[in-house]
Amino acid sequence: MAEENLVPDQDVEQHSILKSVFLHLFPGLLITLFFLIVLPMSIIRGGTSYLAILLAILFVLIPFELGYLFYQGKKKNGRFSLKGIILYREKISIREYLVIIPVIYFLIAIISLLYSPIRAFIIETFFSWVPGWVFLDDFLADPSAYSRSSLIPTLLLGLLLSGFGASIVEELYFRGYLLPRISRFKMLAPLMNVALFSIYHFFSPWQYPAIFLGFLPVVYVVYQKKNIYLGIIIHCLLNGLGVLRLLFMISK
Image 1: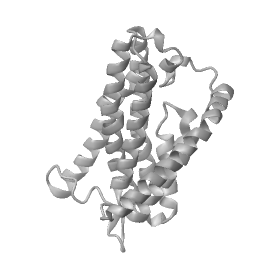
Image 2: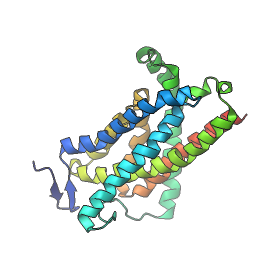
Image 3: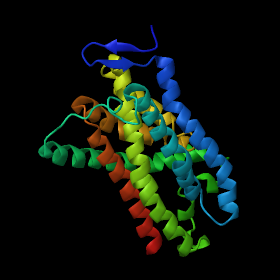
Image 4: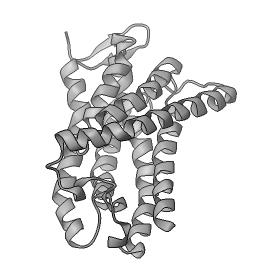
């Protein structure tokens, strides 16, 4: 099979399996490498692992994934544009947004709640050797060990970088760019996309089941509706409200 072929019904170039796997996972390897390098320095300076991953978002995730998209746009359009690069932008009604988003968010909230004890079991069984300060929510174990003057700005930065920056860029990259380019696999395409997106989070393998199960309905609805805005909104809500919850917990 040629590396890139056209799908007649969509007129979208198709990535080979090898290329798709590489483009899904390579950014995650870079993010994890940066995270592991910065993490000890963050801890030594009284910071958290969460700050280290935020720096990885700022200096690796956003520049690489967004940069790659604009690079492809430059090749296709002769200028730095995302025209023809980001797909699945079909319009849907406001009513569909108002129905789909709450339903999927509620479903993910249930999955997250049910996964909490499973996460604890997985960590205890398979990752007990990992130091506690590696986990992104390590500061919740003893918030008093950190000053509020450092935690609150970190979480506010998280609201910006994780709640919006990473969420938007990842949806553009994974669902707007990569997903359409494996659409020849039809209903298997979202499954492949979610599986690889889960593995992409190399820095937190104990979260793989939660990421896979949580994002599966998101990606399927994006694929079915050909609308990445659903994914962007839900992703921003998940990350943004998660950070707000952490802010509330340490502010009590």
